[in-house]
Figure 1 (spheres, rainbow, N blue to C red):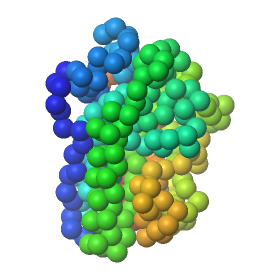
Figure 2 (figure 1 turned 135 degrees about the vertical axis):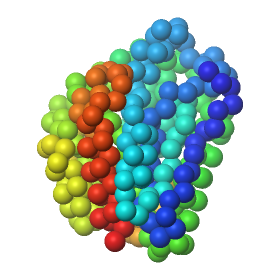
Figure 3 (figure 1 turned 180 degrees about the horizontal axis):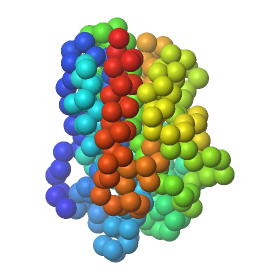
Figure 4 (figure 1 turned 30 degrees about the horizontal axis):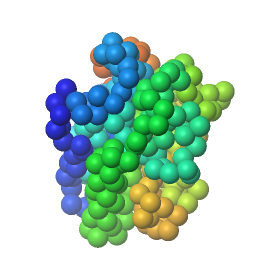
Length: 265
């Protein structure tokens, strides 16, 4: 594990594209200085990374960008969400604090200890969370300035069977879960997503995961910033929990490319 890997990457797309494919949870990289604060042994950490990582989602976004008629922009987290989770609220607003999974996780997917009680998360928030949030804010501002709007499509995956940490595990687990926001997900975006992913199997809204990511500067304020979370059930494109990508990945990438083109025009 390198101690100074790049924290995130912003990959340029077509100047006329308003779309940002956001990939926050695809990486397994943990800097050595962060690893030292995690109590799991190496084998335990690898098992946790198998469960918590949205494996191959960066590859899905990359293939979609290459297949799209108008290349979307991509914002990709290059560090594991066990460093910080850039999509959590960094304060008491975050409901996942109830299971030790706020912006800095203290418990695992199986509710085991990840970091000791009293762990000081502030250095990680300052070093990783805030710069990521600022860079994503600037990426959205860039698309607004260039095109008059921004469309954030969050690319995630989730396991076919619930993990113990999940707060809303009782509902359906469709092949494609579309997470929406009442302010930032217009009907046209949702309709385009349903049409694009119809080839991939059943879709459902906000189950087992709900909502979508919008930088706080724009959240609830700028309707020109639209957003949708795409949660892909992992068994549609890989052996679980952490196998290699299977042929289903290309079908998903093609569907995502179709969505990006539909909302670009």
